[in-house]
Image (cartoon, rainbow over all chains, first blue to last red; front, side):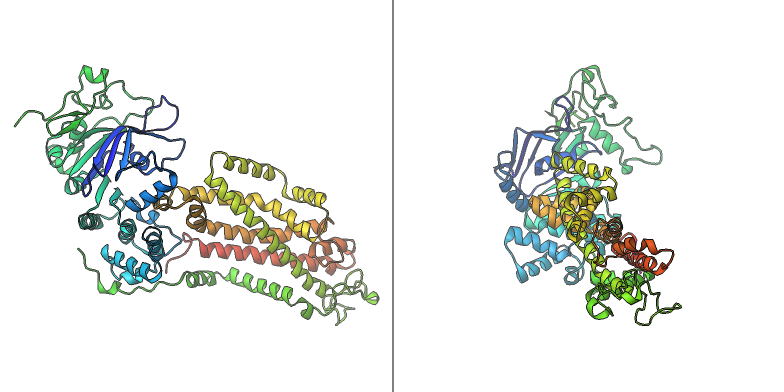
Length: 322
Length: 300
């Protein structure tokens, strides 16, 4: 049994016939594994996450055939049990570290609050553990940072504190929602390395959301490429990036600055993600796809097994046997 | 991984209180206002000992005596006497008591329910929120003083009812301010993080969100304090506030207005007292806002 099992998850806003924001998403995540979700803005990455965490507020509606975490059915769990389970076993690192820390409380207090709530540590014991956590995330002069307010920290430092907060209750799944996007390039590498080290040490599963493909290629063992609310390609790395089956994955890789050379300018993908009112009848990528054929415009392809991965495409790329 | 530079080893954080005091002290106007307000508070607290006379004692031989420094002035009556021969200085000193009491009580009585309603309005956006906000809109649609007059007309004049009327009138401002601040904070990541970590709704409301909404509320409360003094004076002037012979500044103005031609001091001095205290409190509120709002703080 996997740590996280999602079948057929969909999130909708507005009337029942409106296109879903997240459409038939299936995910499997084993304990201790790193799964990356990639996709451009508006592809439903964050909404899928919020649905998993039970944080989609009305008027949003969540439906799923199966939403299991660590053997518990999240859909059947009561509000209170769900909070207890998720608060302890699942933690999240956010994109903007300074927004993710409560500006009114000292760092030490925020850490102690989590430790008290989920591990029952109090007073000096909680403070000692909080200090250990700050040292674990490699914060210099950790003892003095315990009494600092979030606004007194730099971005990278705040993200380290946020990571310390996330791992405080020793979760089994850590979700990192673009943890390095808001940071300086030099800090990005440090934070990623820290996350991966902690993931290995604690044997946590890591769900990494990113639109930085280089980061994903470096960290993840599994990747799920999302487009317009659907998973268009799911598979293991590095095979998937070496031979992408879906034209969208191929286009994403081609748009990497590293792929361009002086003689061949970067190739972009023309057009934009279909919105609520201009969704094509067939494949969602069909208006933008370079390899589009008639059947693509007529029907929507299912997520089928291809050579390296599973992809939603009738005419997958890179399928010839080497 | 990186090794930290040794110079970053022991940063000493200024305590938030000290930081606040330093920022506040840089504002001259606010400091002067604080002094004036301190004087007012001392007057209010020590009124029986500071005032030379009983504020209600009538000296029938000295009706409308001018202040001491004017021709015909009496050294005993430093600021002169009113139409019934009562010592103006004593009445002003005792009046400070009433004004501060009315200000404090009405701010407290509108701040607490206002914050509570505002929090509810922000946290329950489906039914309760709109209901609360429409009710506040109705209250805001009526001119404040008119509404206060209506409340007093229903409850009857008097000190307590004046306070109640002012509290009711200033309620919508707190509700709207709190709700706006709550809505701004609710979508921040730290609230999501708190929800994810298992915080219940009450904890979110009072522990996570409310402390981050306090800065504008504190400023509004100080401004509300001065508005309350002004409103109380207005109600007193209309004869609907605190009743004579209680030495309330607005009431004093009202009873003295017939003598404005003959004895300017009976009107001017209570007016100046109102002006001074309201100005001081407003300046103080300004200073507080500058000191509390991190966006306005100058880095040093």
